[in-house]
Length: 124
Ligand SMILES: [Zn+2]
Image (cartoon, rainbow, N blue to C red):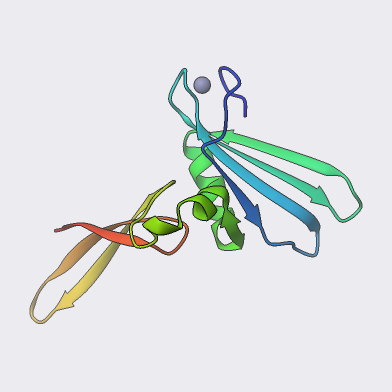
């Protein structure tokens, strides 16, 4: 991957095929110089034309969340099956509001990963 310098991706995701793209691969990593998350989507169109989309910072997170539903598996997932119950790799936050009778809602904050693992971080 490339940002301020060339570096190795932290994880590689393989994505589902679509009508438009016959091959899709997504890599994420953190730039060792500026520390920003960097995401790169490589895909091959049905007519054989390859495309590469590279984003960093907030845009990298947005790109990740856009493709997250299409992930089949990742390199880390294959290598770290034993950590199945705890979120690992690229995490994102989810807030869940829990209804309480007659009182303000309870907000539960979870850290989630893209494999369906989640962990309660705090309750507000
Ligand atoms: Zn950088």
